[in-house]
Structure formats: structure tokens, C-alpha cells
Image (cartoon, rainbow, N blue to C red):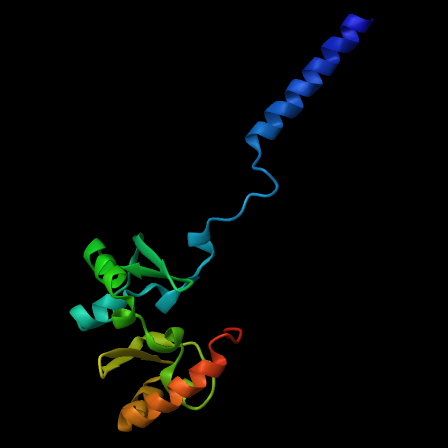
Length: 156
């Protein structure tokens, strides 16, 4: 009887051990790359400067910078961004620049954009883009001031 009980305990222990080996530990964390917010809805921030057109990036060429996951159309664009992220990153974390000038967080459409004074600005609408461009210097100054207050606010 004790041999049979020992055998059953051994089988049960082996089953539990094999199940535990296959399961991830309870404390495993998700991959930080997949957890980071996707910037510009996956559009390549460098392409605005180099190609002059909003260009979708690909998952094969990703980089996390400042808590945001950016995608690039190719490795060269990723490397350019890595070398000088402040040059290529969208202003205001990719939020609509005109709304930011008005003191509001609003998600932008990365296909509506402008480069002004060497900075990439994206907008929620073509009308907002046009209003921003009418006085880009003053609007950028207001947006920069508002960004200091709103940058840590929850994203819409």
C-alpha cells in the first residue's frame, strides 16, 4: 500500500511540476515594447522630414523613446531618430498642436501635419492645422506653455 501511495504521489508531483514548468511565473511582466504607447499611430516621425509625406512605419523597426513606441519605415530612419530624437519627435507627445495652444489634450491625425521652425506638429483636423499656421510662432509658444501643465495628464 505504501508503494502504491508513493507512486501516486510521485505521479501527482510530476504532473504539477511539468505544468508549472510550462506556465509563466505569476510575477512575469509584459514585454515593455508592447506596453509602451504607440506614437503617431504607427507613422514614421523621420519620414515627415526626409520624405515630406506621412509614411506608415513597420513593427520590424521600432524604438521606444520617452515612454513612447515609435515605428519607422526602415532601419535608417530608426537610426536617425535614435541619434537625435528631439529633432524628429512630434511636439507635445503627438497631441494636436492647435488644441494644445488652446489648453486641451486631443488626439491628432498623423496625416495632418506641418514642420515649422524645424519641429514636427500634428493636428486633429485640417482646420486646426490652418489656424496654427496663421500664427505658428504665437501658437507654438502658447502650446509649449500649456504642454508643461498637461503633459502628465491622462491621454484622451
